[in-house]
Length: 144
Image 1 (cartoon, helix red, strand yellow):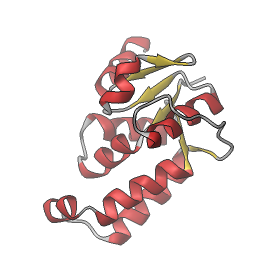
Image 2 (image 1 turned 120 degrees about the vertical axis):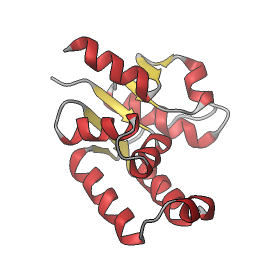
Image 3 (image 1 turned 90 degrees about the vertical axis):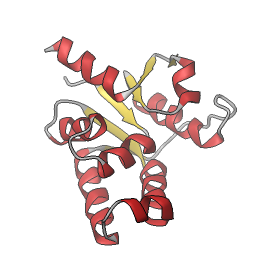
Image 4 (image 1 turned 30 degrees about the vertical axis):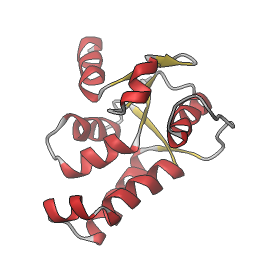
């Protein structure tokens, strides 16, 4: 059974913007079934909001709204969509990050993959190791 990981919106945005990068490699692993990627609808909504409304990103990277919708549809097909999140609050400084941990708790994820320093500082939460995409890819390589 493949390891289960929650990918937060920083990873999903990075995967979209940087083909060939570590975050994109994780999405590819999910699409190939080598990992179980769990995401809450709120994580997908935050990913869409960042990609569709952040002008700094829109100016730097050439993509259309349709590209974003296609990407999100592909994620929905490749990921386990978690809808029943346990109520968590006050675990992380940014309240939006609590949803990431709630998603991990809901599916008993082995990993939370993020670049968010507040989450990474925790190290782990309720049995989920909190790691960068590069660290997670190294763990996957070592497990082969």
